[in-house]
Amino acid sequence: MARPFKCRCICSKPKTTCFVPQNGVGSGAVILGYDEYEVIRLLDYAALTQEQCADKMNVSRSTVARMYDSARKKMADALVNGKKIRINGGDVIVCNALKPECAHEKHCCRRNQNEE
Image 1: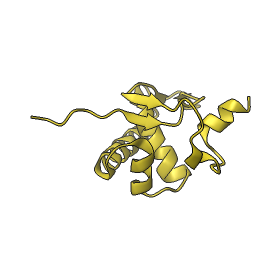
Image 2: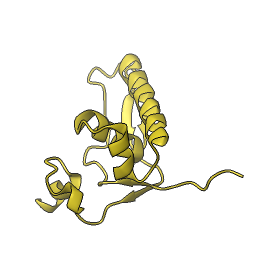
Image 3: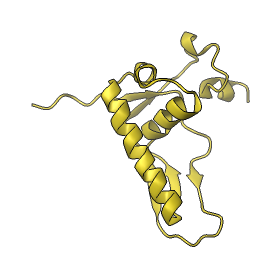
Image 4: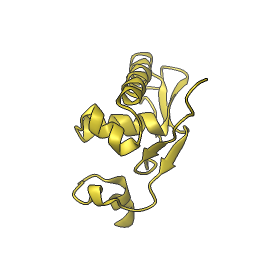
């Protein structure tokens, strides 16, 4: 019997959810899930380790590795083939308040929303 699916915890949904190639030569789009976006944000932008990312998202480190691999392949497809990147979907739980561990996070999405 398979393990039950665990929802992934994300800070918030991104403000920008679509990126379009400027020259418009390519066709099609790739869909990056909110969870894949969050993995890219935490690993590449916030420079967390996979273990730290897994703790923040309430998933295993191996799940983070799979999401990261999937997100990188999708972004490579979009960049090489001139496709749109849309960020949408996925089984995620969005934080409803600023967590204590995010108090010193400069780019915490929740903090940025509260400042508007």
